[in-house]
Length: 202
Image (cartoon, rainbow, N blue to C red; front, side, top):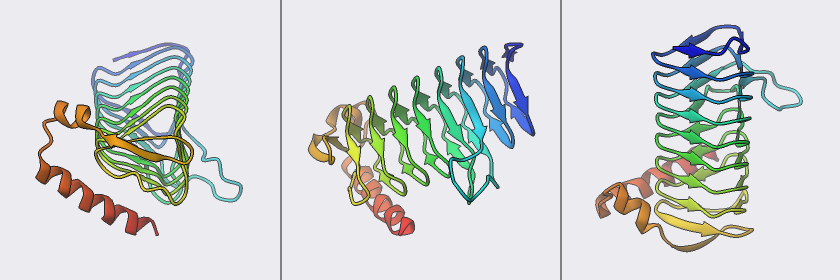
């Protein structure tokens, strides 16, 4: 484990094996950081949610093998733990709001923004400056092109590339699905799971 001496740690924070944390990172518990994570300078994880009337009750969990780049912010949960899944890659300036749940292998490009209570399914890729409305579900193996805006009524289904404001489907995301060896049955299963998650958000 390698933690820079300027790192601020407050509250109950646990570290997995071989974690690397750079200068001027702020970590607020309850916070669980998985093994082999790398957190770059200036990141702030576990701070209070941006909510006028409700304070944090739950903390943050960062999955193993995740990379969190410069000045990323991940806020603590209110109703549930905020979760960043295994092998996430959060690029500089991206934001994960309170009560969000990111499954494994999710990528947020620079300045991608998730409002509260969003659920991002596995292997989703959110491009530069993407904005996602609260309580949204982002389907697995999707790609959101840079500047895409996900509104409250947007449907971001698994395996599709979306662009624009409001978001519009462009084509199937064959590149991601081929890289992950996704078969048709798996994609159908992910579509069913997507519908279930959307119903749970209502």
